[in-house]
View 1 (tube, each protein chain N blue to C red):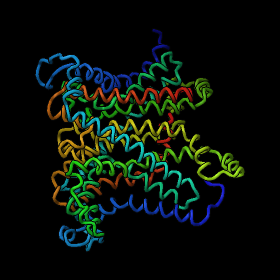
View 2: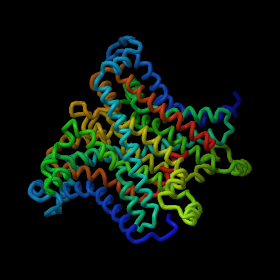
View 3: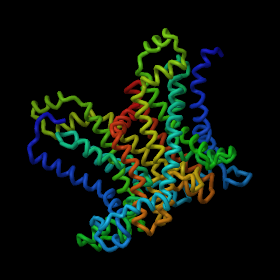
View 4: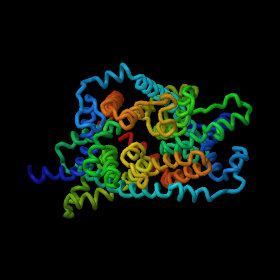
Length: 291
Length: 278
């Protein structure tokens, strides 16, 4: 190789080396481990083929629960997170004074860590001193008070509300940016032609927001399938495993129960699901704007 | 933006909805601040919506010192201050090779780096743990910083490559005529011209490092090295019954983020939209 051909590789070397060490090789090795039974310490790994995957699907009720919770979480995020985010963006795109302040308030929780959000909301939900129950007592709805995070029926939804508080600012900001690229002319033409506001929205705004919508839907789905911090820090997957998701169950299987093979298989489920979302997304975006 | 001034009832409804939502959004922060500033007896006797009888600033000092929140924050600051510039340098060098050196494998290598965005951190933890143990880097700052830099690489290259491509090629020729080598071109031409992208990346990267939880949870096992996220969790575990102190700790951990956010708000918004559009 000539010096000239070698030069780009020299500039790439640090990034490439670290990338290989930290992400690429470990993920391949995890894939390999998912075909073994191993406790992480023993010298021997026992090859079991696809058993880890089969056991998860056929026999592990917590895995099924976790998968269901991830799907619920995804559906909730797609509808509520994106819905509220879009509504806020449309409102803030009007003639509103103090837009920057409102935007700042709605977006701020998004920059907090999942652990901070979890800790804050665990306090909001505190059974005896928390805001939620105190408020219900004060307005005479004492019978509605409950230990929100300690009851399997409510825990997942309670955590989701906290996640909603944290997350709606992101689609809002993306939609706002998308709305600002839409020119005025079509609206003026629509008004002249006597279009109602909802018609303007449906026939002008919505189609022109499609690109933003694709981005928001893809990132929301991926984030929903990977959700971890807020759940681990709020409920740890409990009570009675009712809030387990794939990521948290992977953590327990691997680092608490030392079932390395099972944990690795779960993490490859995550890889697969992510790919199912990302590949069409990348295909779509590269087709429209040549990357 | 609307073309016509809307009627006043429409405007009233809009402001009404926005103000109600803004209040709901502020409730958790205000509630935490109220609790953090009360004394323990005040918390038990006064209504939940009441201001503290007497502001207990001492709660913060207690959380900072006895609760070790100060130590956790210093640890996180140390990691971030090393990780962010080092990571961006590594990413910028790679993005430079991908965009400005007539590199034959440019697109293929870029795609290879992007694969990293598809891989959830979970799929790397066990092998990374083995690697850190073998190299005696487990629970060390170089170990955790190396891993943080690794996970920042795909996103950083995506952003920087995108920006470097917008710098016209004529600049390279001018640099060549002025006698700049490739290293000179990188440090004296491309990096200074890329400051807007780098500034955005610094802010986003800093926040991501500051807020990172999963990797810190697994790879930092010593309490004296914990970062703010895992530190807050252990602080919460130790002070779970002392609500005033616990909320003082939470508020302390919110304050630095709030300051960064208020100072650099435009970077968050612009960086975010720029990043997803690649």
